[in-house]
Length: 86
Image (cartoon, rainbow, N blue to C red):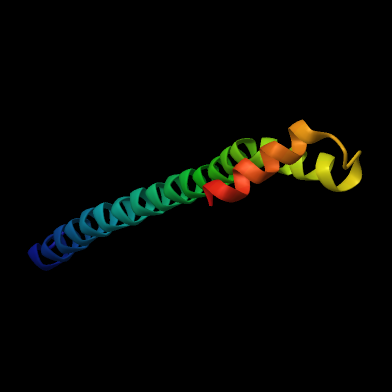
């Protein structure tokens, strides 16, 4: 092997090592982005379910008032309390 070929081979080897490092960094960034997207959607879905859990008693109370017996004074007073609290 001539000195020129050896120098060229060493240059190619160093470029391969550099490219390998860059590609590993890109792949690591892609993995982090995937994890962050999953966490983002889990948070969105979790907050939506939590909000529904929080407002469900009020929705049920409104369903009872509008679809049920309107003479039920306890539901009417609860509805009035809810409206006064707003």
